[in-house]
Image 1 (cartoon, rainbow, N blue to C red):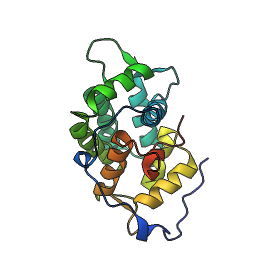
Image 2: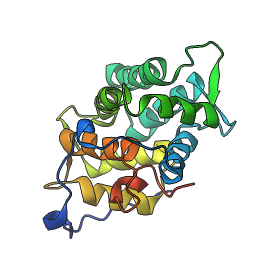
Image 3: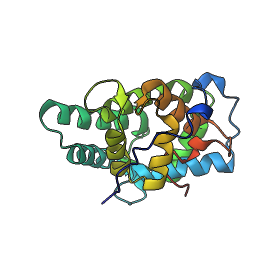
Image 4: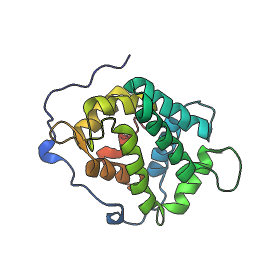
Length: 202
């Protein structure tokens, strides 16, 4: 069972990176470090471990978020629906087939990162934030973030570090989460603390 996130005050408040928009980043050169980040996110989403990302993986993530959060009724259905919508809108193979491999996933992002991904990452993040925000208060609590990371298979150390980096006054605002997600998917900066948003790099 995952350990509880420490409730001690953040030590990074004074040095938190300022939120950045996708358009703020320079053109991406598809470097090895950036591709490692993509392969890490692929592994987190591929809950079956099959090496092929499918709709069932997103259904499994949604089910796990519901279970861990003790959700029921309409809220449970909303979380499941968001995860399936993320698959349909951002990952479903457009050329046919039931899933995509890690190589196909990376190639897809290489085609998009200097174009439509800059818009997609914000919309994707907004959908993901909805699934994480169980009580609908537009902030992600420590417990809500724990549920998200556990459902995605993100380790405790990265979970704690990322929450402390993003949180302000004990919770994560949407703007800060979207900024972290944009950094992960677009930035090639190897020193960025957001590189571990989905856990230790593969």
